[in-house]
Amino acid sequence: MTASPRLAILDVGHGNSAVLHDSNGILVFDAGPGSTLNEYLIENQIREIAALLISHSDADHLGGAINLLLSREFRVKEVYLNPDPTNTGDKYKIFRSALRDAKENRGTRIVPHLTTTLSESFQSGATTVEILAPTPENALGGIGGRDLAGKRINPNSMSAVVRLMVDNIPMVLLPGDMDAVGLANLVRDHPALPARILLFPHHGG
Image 1 (cartoon, helix red, strand yellow):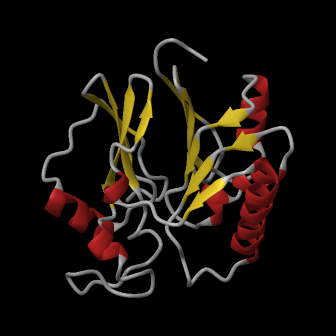
Image 2: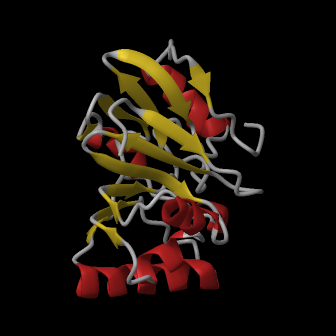
C-alpha cells in the first residue's frame, strides 16, 4: 500500500485493466483477458481488493476476473457491472459462475449496476471515483434496447466511464470502450470533461 495514490495501467494486450493503489485500499478497473491482473497482484503482494469495477461485459474487460474470483489467494469485496442480457458467450457465463463462487465462499458482494448514481461512492484515500456514464435513465433502456435519443444501445454504448479525482483535481479519465452513442450521451451531460490523463479506448472510439 502506498501513502499517495498510484494508478498502474496493465499491459493486457487487446483489452483494459488498471489498478488504483491508495491509502484506503485497492480498486481495480476492468480485468482484461488472461492472467496479467493476477500476476500483477501477486507481484505486488496484494491479496484484498476493495472493489472491482467492470466497464462492460466484453471478455477483454472481464475475462481476467474469472481466475481472480475463483482463486483462494484473493478476496474481492465488491464487484460492479451493468447486466448484459444479450451476452450468451461462454466467458460471460463462466464469469457469472465465478461471481457466485466468490459470493458463497469469500463473501463477495455483487452489485448489478454501475451508473452515475454511484458517482463518488468509492472513496479510496485521496482518490474519489466518479462514474460519469451511463445515467440510470439510459441504463433502463438496457443493452439491446434504445437510449432516450432513440439510438440502439449495445455493450459499448453502456460502457461505464470513470474519472479519478485526487484532492479534487481531475487526474484520469477511463472511458472503457465507449462508442459514438455513449459519447453523445456523455457530452450531453458533461460538455467539458477535464482530466490530465486519458486512457484511450482500444477500439479507438
